[in-house]
Length: 274
Image 1 (spheres, one colour):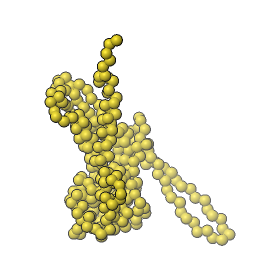
Image 2 (tube, rainbow, N blue to C red; image 1 turned 135 degrees about the horizontal axis):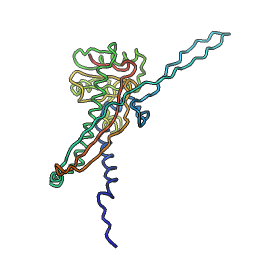
Image 3 (spheres, rainbow, N blue to C red; image 1 turned 120 degrees about the vertical axis):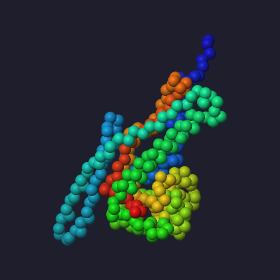
Image 4 (spheres, helix red, strand yellow; image 1 turned 90 degrees about the horizontal axis):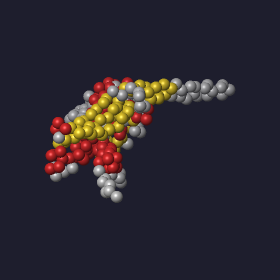
């Protein structure tokens, strides 16, 4: 009986699983804005160019007067539309010689770098959208060091716009991190008793608001936003492909994803330093 060799055909599925796990881990580690927004990927059906996700109005409490009937109310349901028009891709070629003579695992290293680039791009898209779409009435002026006064004002403006205080995120530039650490009401994430927040980019909480640091924000930029102030949908999560490149005697690799995002409620759920 002839020997059976476990080659590329037999192990390609395992390699794809390992790469998928690596990509997912890198995306989680690098994205700090994405976890704080409203993920509506479950509505991004195959074949659709837009995502239609539900929204609804609210009830109004009636003060009943004796001997009068209570009046029934209706909640109006509708949908919001989000375009799936962001097709992001990273491609690269590794020649055979480089792969063979490199002392590091070039494929694993480059896949991880491509995943990090994707994570930062989505974060950057969300930040750009929030900075442009934040309601002007929620702007807060920075005077001197960033601290308690600006944070409480940002939180208060969102409250006055009828946004709940749970599920709020404060994203700050690295240059403001030292100011944040000096705020008396700031609770360092290391004191939570779990390393999960630190791994997800969260450095702590202040007045119940999750605080993250993003290198994509410039020196005097900060954003406070509610989870449902921005919607994000992935129609295709990062997908890895490869093919031989005979002209360069190597392999061309590709990592791409398809998604869309949208600021909701006219930006009233976002406050920024202006």
